[in-house]
Amino acid sequence: MISASNQVLPVANANEINQLLRRYGVKFGIYKNGQFKEQFFPFDPIPRIINSEQFKVIEKGLVQRADALNKFLFDIYHEKNIIRDGIVPEDFVYLSSGYTPQCENVTPPENIYSHISGIDLVEGKDGEWYMCKAR
View 1 (tube, helix red, strand yellow):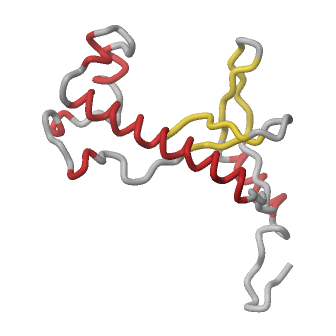
View 2 (view 1 turned 30 degrees about the vertical axis):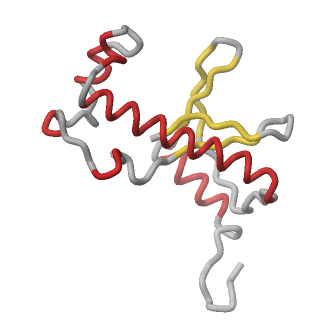
């Protein structure tokens, strides 16, 4: 399908896009019935419509998740309670490619370490929205 500006729309290329995602191994994982299952990431060119009432609930969860991520990062680079209390293994943090030792005891303005967060949302069969993970 071609738009008025002669640009190819994703709807017309959905199959090709999905083939490229498979070729390059774009996957995600989910836990189902206690088992981890990895599957290819499907591309859907039709945007999901989220009404204002649903978005109010989703927005609260997104803000909560972003705040939790920033608090986690503050703790990792300062007090390390989450490691000391055995909640997160030390190796998980210090061997992570995202860990930056130069940030030890550095506090960014307003304690915002993650200015952009990729938070995966999935609409369940029950019509509710679920947050899967944050990056």
